[in-house]
Image 1 (cartoon, rainbow, N blue to C red):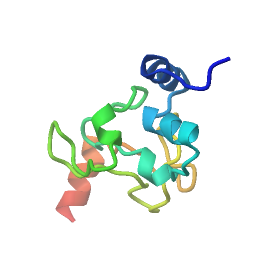
Image 2: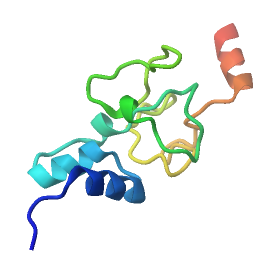
Image 3: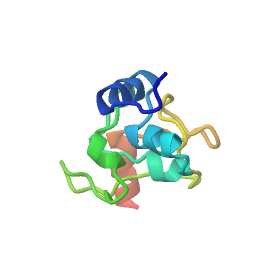
Amino acid sequence: MTTKLNSKSQRGLAIALQVPSEYLDAVIRGVPMSATDILKFCPHCWQPGTTLEEIWLLPRSQFCFLCGTALRNSCAKCNEPITSLKFRFCPYCGFPYKASKDSESQSRSR
């Protein structure tokens, strides 16, 4: 009956499906969008289990608007693209997406 999805419904559906609203917009328009363009997060500000900040998902966003850290869209260890933040660890190498403060301080001291 309807051929267009209003923006409020689109945002609600994106939250329910845990995908960025830009992804749904691309699906509606029939434009391909790669996973590495979609999922970006700040390794310092993001808390596992929470939704991503919408501003991180914008195509032009490269740095966190809160702390200035470069946004990450791939695993820090194996460099495989992040396709889902439903889990806390990389499915390829098992490395945590958000490193603990102990591992960050060890990597800085090397």
